[in-house]
Length: 102
Image: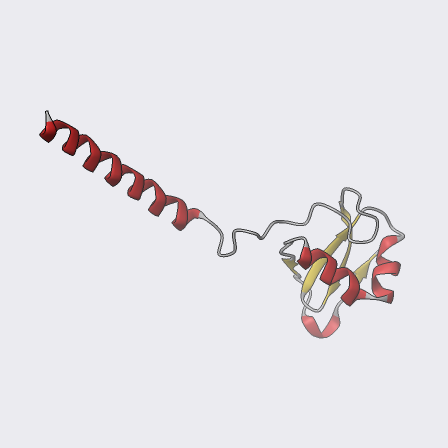
């Protein structure tokens, strides 16, 4: 009876370790990171047709008025996004010539 319990315990531990290892391999580098879903200016749901490429990152907004507000104090809004754990997408536009799509 003890041998059976020991075998079951060993198998349970082995399975738990296997699932833990698989989960870590699939998890993002920073478990707190998440994609941007809210506008940094108004806090509403983003519209992926309204964005600014800024310093190599793409920031999305809810409406066409928000990019102008963002560009007046971009560091304030970038900090807000990072404090929320948002990992911004990389911009396909080269860093030296960031462009805003309004």
